[in-house]
Image 1 (cartoon, rainbow, N blue to C red):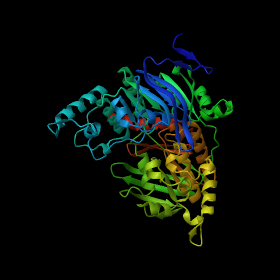
Image 2 (cartoon, helix red, strand yellow):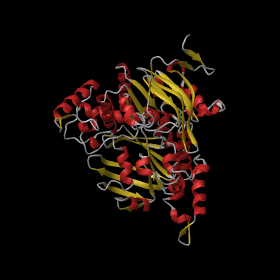
Image 3 (cartoon, rainbow, N blue to C red):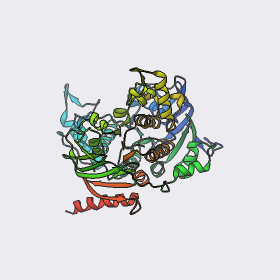
Image 4 (cartoon, rainbow, N blue to C red):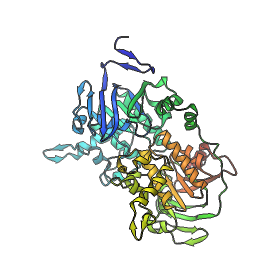
Length: 529
């Protein structure tokens, strides 16, 4: 057929006619590291195009170049046939390209309306035209079928899903022709994810081109028209979504030299993991209350046990972890540490003195010092162990950091790299390695696999399981309820800030459906009342 070329891997490449985006021989290097090489890719007008691959495969770099945030080292990017000026976000915006990143660009203290018009205010005779902005804000809310937030409500008080919607509204106000999403559902619960996927489908129906990066292969297969797989900085294959299966995607991401067994291992639900009976009590919580967030929450964690906190987004899961980590000064409750009652930790210092450590949901904002090296990030919570005669020993520090990080599959040759330059999966491995060095008694893991690829996710789940086997007590929160069910020996289910029920593996099977049933039972009863 004219204008088509059939590749050996069954990839179909089209001519340039009708392309919203065309990458032509594009490459990007960060120093000695080639993030993207020889990229030839086209994205069709009005279609949903998904980019998948392991962390560091080049997906987000690809979106960054299209958004003008990253300048290619070589090659050309065309938008609707016109060459895009390299490394110029304003030029990309003028061409109709708007990017929505995993780290949202919301100003918390401004209203929802003000955030929608951020950088694009409407004015009349030099004065802000609040009436016109309100009219247009309510209009776009109506288009999306959502209720407009009152002008007095700050955007920071909205849920993550609602804040993400503000970013989409901002794109619509800007009359975007191409919208880029980087992990659009990574921070969302089940219902919010479904709503986001419906929104992407609605954008396609409006003729807007959507390109998105995601590690959730089920969602990719469900919403995309076309799927491109990246591997080691190169485009491995592009096919229509209907021509892919989940197993084929995983196989292509890993490479043809990987075994079928490894691909199957990454796809399985891991329900065959051996269960362990908990040992002595590490912590017992009673009556944990944070006004307006959680009320009268209690549970016990034993040595070598994993307790999952299940529930929907907004149920109070993260608040429970933050309260235990000393990050909620309003928290009240009773806490026993190894059988001895202690004052509730209202500071991180006191929580750490009790042996409680937090793996935060926001690894970049709250977990890592991005400008410091991987080595420094791993050892910062346990520097005295690397000291000799009161002075830090670089040799000992490097050795300890390397040993801890490689235990989680981190490349030892990258231990000196700046943490901010690493992929999300490698950054998460650094945080796990930090606590392996510091050796707390209790690890609070909040969204431990958020926004990382299927290979790194598998490694981290295995690592948490292994750490529990070594005697660490772990409390885990995840929007991926399959992960909670896979890892947990006991699940405490929250709904509307209160304990809705619990599921113990010794008494019944821990499944996603059991967690949801327990949570929904309370939600539905409340709605009926």
